[in-house]
Length: 199
Image (tube, rainbow, N blue to C red; front, side, top):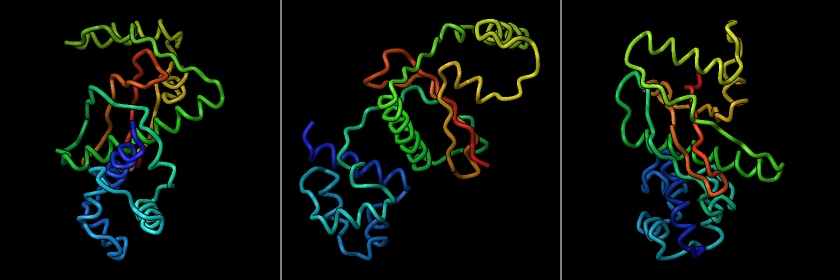
């Protein structure tokens, strides 16, 4: 992928991650760039000069390297648990925040030589009744060697078993969501991600 293509996609993602329109971004930059220019950057038709680039990064609260790194993750099969309807803009913003966090985790694990493995076979049960819930929970406790005692640290158990837990700040309409699958260049297997709302 060409640098201009990477930049255009990442700029758009950064703007949407912050929940901004092109016009709002221009205002945050004290109108040193026009909406039309931002549109050209996002379509890959032109690149900003260095002063504009720095202002974009400041307004979007990102580092310049974010805009030039190829995206290494894509989220699939997103399932939300929400209290009320989230707007499409809010959903997109949350998805992009998560993708960014997963990318950072991926980079750290690459540097440290950590390999994450998630075995999805524990999650193949169809749950249609209360009895199915108990059967699935028993299977999971057995597969993960949890035992029958109370679970005092759910996040630790999830992360120990290859599930990434990411905390995000979002509107009151958002409660949590689960990505049942995530594709990454480095990961061959499905990886589950659970995102609790930040209180």
